[in-house]
Amino acid sequence: MDDAHVPAGRRGGRPLTALPTESAEPLVRTKKGVGLTTVLLVDDHALVRAGLAALLGGAERIEVVGQAADGERAVELAYRLRPDVVLMDLSMPVLDGVAATRSILAALPGTRVVVLSSFADRRRVCEAIAAGAVGYLIKDCDPHDIIAAVRSAHRGNAPIDPRVAGALRPRVAAKASRRTGGKGRRLRLWGGLSVSSP
Image 1: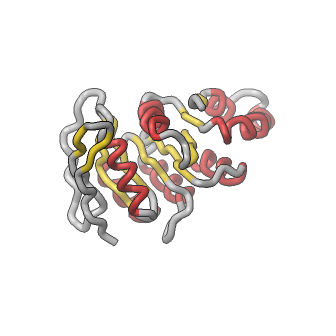
Image 2: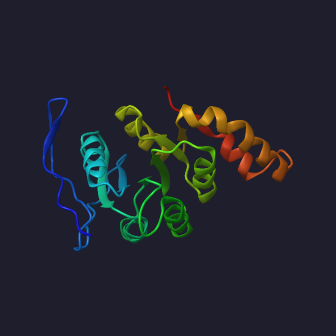
Image 3: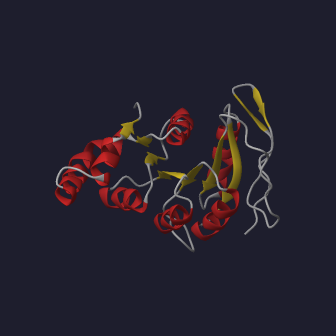
């Protein structure tokens, strides 16, 4: 389903330009500048996508290159646009966020997926991380945390909302230690996670 272009608006007194959205026409990426972070937005709610596009589009050195309303479309756009970061919802029609994350990273291992979800239960978080997501935020977080998470993920860090990190860390770390004997990629991955400020 094609979405209308996000209308121009204002945030903090600064004008926001219209941003590209999911479209039947191919999206043409501008030549990437030094230090620019390109982002693909994935959420089945148009209002959420519009808000995120306005938020990130108003941030310096971040470019929203596309939007998708379901996981299948997200995979298609990711293959074509090759974004630095995918901001991924989990509960979506056609293909959910976990499956979409797995498919995107199978072809684009250099892309960083940050989950932005309403759910903070251990099962969903573990599934997202197992699929390859490097970050996990809750949708009611501070808007500036989303900007910070996108930049952090692009730099190679793994931003995790403190509301899920505290309960999740001991069990995941213990499981990784059992599987690797205290060493290995899983444990190092979790050890590299950075908890965003509350």
